[in-house]
Amino acid sequence: MRKADSFKPGDFVTFIDDVISGRIITITKDQITIESKEGFIYHCQPEEIIHRKGLDHLIDESEIRKEEELEKPKRSVRNSKEKSFVEIDLHIHNLIDSTQGMTNYDILTVQINKARQMLKYAMENNIRSVIFIHGIGEGVLKKKLIKMLQKYPVEISEADFHKYGLGATEAYIFQNYKNF
Image 1 (tube, rainbow, N blue to C red):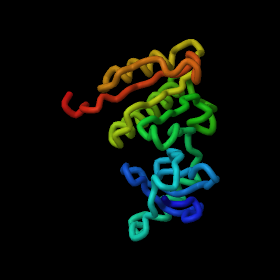
Image 2: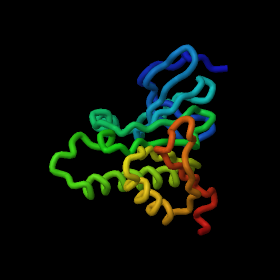
Image 3: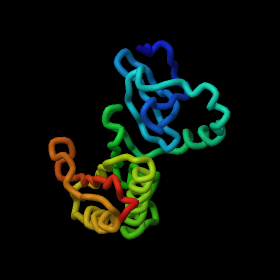
Image 4: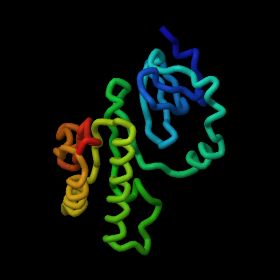
């Protein structure tokens, strides 16, 4: 059983049973937090990851620094046992710095494009489910989101009411979607 003290913040690691890799952000007594190159946050136990020794030369350090400087939308994975679950908050203030000079249509376009990017990322990385946090409001974003999701091989449902209320939609990605 690997111990947390064999890792340190800044180490590059990869999950033993997945294609996900990234840099360790924090280490506590109970868990290790990892951020992938795409900005996803993962929580795991030390025995679920290994060092990427010998692979560090494949990582472009300048690319990582550029990404760290950018403000990322809030995205997370519940825990390492549910790596097939990601969420994205589509509230516009989480996606861009300022909406000054933007029309409602421009804002909606940014939100839907981010949702589409997240869905495609999840499909490419075999992530089974995406939670889109859209809020309640007048329902314009939710309607547009559902219309966009209907073009993909997903099952659409309300997200967990206890956690999100009525302000989130879940898209479960069919595992054999490539056959559609």
